[in-house]
Image 1 (cartoon, rainbow, N blue to C red):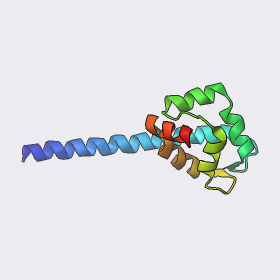
Image 2 (cartoon, rainbow, N blue to C red; image 1 turned 180 degrees about the vertical axis):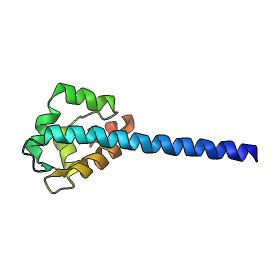
Image 3 (spheres, rainbow, N blue to C red; image 1 turned 90 degrees about the vertical axis):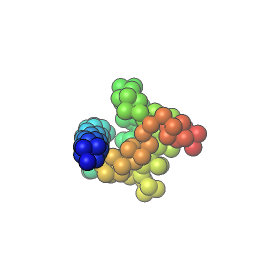
Image 4 (spheres, rainbow, N blue to C red; image 1 turned 135 degrees about the horizontal axis):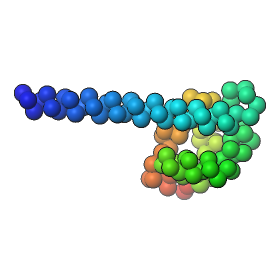
Length: 110
């Protein structure tokens, strides 16, 4: 019974850590989105997105979060779901899906 309590406690800790990572990720992407949304309309068009992705500090910042930008235009297409705009929720969800070394490699090949 003690082992079960320890395992359950470990699961609770892992869930809290996962939730915390998601909150931090969402906040970071909100900062990026706000910086990139030059028009202030709440959507990123391709020009706004590409402009911010050309900034070396942004590239380094994203790389530090396990997202290596190989082709910003292709990334825009993936994140925009084909409608030519990226909303804040699309940015958060899309970057979360693409994070990680293997995903970056797959994305670069794409």
